[in-house]
Image (tube, rainbow, N blue to C red; front, side, top):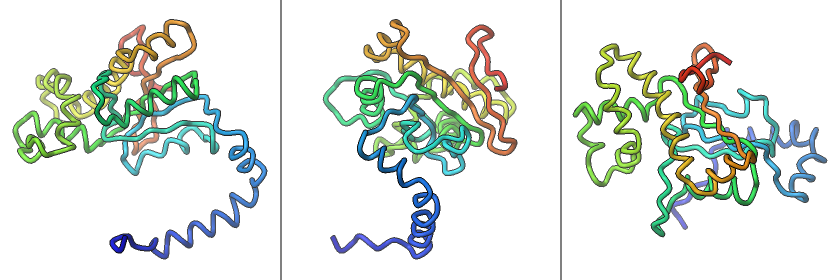
Length: 216
């Protein structure tokens, strides 16, 4: 495959630095992970955004989190139609094979996917309305919630409101998966909604008792 290039020099240097430091200091742990397999206690569904560093936020080590990232940390509804479903496959594997005890959906501030959804619903992003737009069709998952926020006139308030609603939409859609709903009912699995403000480092969690996000 002649179109595949070698890694940029700065990445190979970073790799060698990691191998000589972090790996060298934790060889036994990495070997144990390789030999015994992974046993993550939690799954994290977060955005692809490069500014959201899930393992750093929670101080997690290798092997601790089963992480799935996609545009706007969305989970689609359960749709067993025989097609390709990356997020649904990750959820299925985490719950039925890895038996994670927690699933955390992590949204964040200044989310480009959420902003794009607002622009699309407002008629300002015709490129996302095209049937050929993977991003647009993915953000259709959030379209109903986006339309519900149309009454919020302040741009920043609407953005934040929809970012947090994206978390709630994903949590609701998770419960449409029979194996997720059963695990929750049996007490084997807990679902958590989180939102991270990048600039301040603040983390908020959804509290169903007050139907709102509260500071952690």
